[in-house]
Image: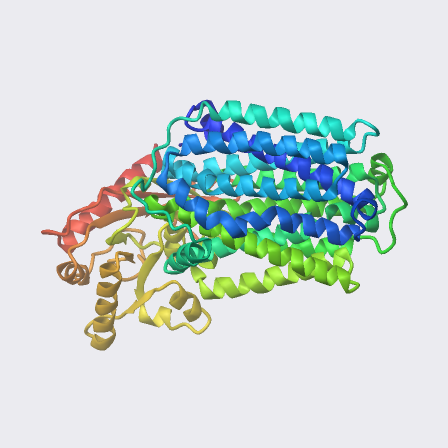
Length: 633
């Protein structure tokens, strides 16, 4: 898939009917949820005798409670049975739930309406493991970011329309509830119709024996998730995002009325800005990461989420702008544009945070139990959202104001992000590599498919500048274990970074045989663990721009570990400020605008058998000559 073909997925039967079906479900959920939220905000005390702020948070907790209770069970069903038939059953259930909603509106019964909200949560619980485990089944690996971006954008656009329609029609006198009921029934029926066109999706583990005990099964899938550190931390990251979103988005109706002093229509306006942001951020993920899963966007997302949540606190007025201020007057107030900007940017950075995490979980989950992994994700998501609801109710009940929740959430986000990135530095290191290469270079990569997606390998490359390693790290989505000179590895300010990246210090045997032996043992260990080790066989930076003689240590590495060798060549860095050319940061003819053009090419993997330092040097030299010819043409 090229960077320009993201929307081509919408032309395929393997994706479009599913896209419409899941977006329709999100639309229906939000028409009802937001109609109910507005009803509670304006009539909650009358209908239920409870504080509206607390009742809104209670309703949010009821919707997500089924995810916590039943995800483990439905994850098993999603893995065991054919999935398109399950989707059709779920959409029929949605029609029945909407008929119950009609009864609740007719009776003006808050208990019945809250029951409908719970059942909609149950229906979403049934759909969620199928929804996210289905994408890797119908998409190629290089399409996952694009597909997830479209799904997230489509979901939030549906949320936008659902929010707007629900809030608008429920406010209409006399006929509001009737229109909401009819609209929900129509959307549910259309969702079922689109589900009929989803292709047959075979079960991933048809022989699975169902465990009917939800408690023990929940514990089992969570325990299994914990055995894979990358999956666990990705799921925890997604769960934290839903905690973050539950704290902020659930408060918007009350924030509109009690903090801003606005009319109900402004609730839809604020949610509109957030949804525009997250849809934009979700779609931009494919543009920023290309056809790969770029986890470096995750720290970028968390930074933006913190900054704009905190700023939303400072942008909120101390005194409401009025009583029932309408949209025109609201937008004419200069200070509210800062609030709207904060909401947009929260959405953009939220998209950067979630889309790569979803793609990682889908890609790295075992195919035969992917739905159960997504069920574990749903359980933890729900647990975090229930915790968010409880915390919000508790803080609001003790006199805290809604802007205070925004500030605390932003601070918590920063603390948790720092903790996670210290615990799992792969995310932050990817961010540094991505940011560094994107901010200084226009990188063109050829032959990326020659890199093994898993299993051991030895990557070799020419060494032109001090930025070679970050460029390679930014171009390759697998973690690279760099072999570097021990003196550089020991630099006080950089040692933590090198340790976190799993770099291996090495020294010439004639100068420090102990360090050399330790390096060889560590290389053995990394390769035996199925990792990709990166080495610059020249042993030092070139001083004249030409390829230097490869050292024979690479022959010893391959003799001990006969793994595939992937040759690579970098071009365009000689003469840059980080090379040994001795020149100023001159503009060479490959440089365009502010970004220096750099080319990187990966060759076909080579068998370790019979390879020598000279033969490997020749392989890298040929790649470099190809790039040099391209630059001159």
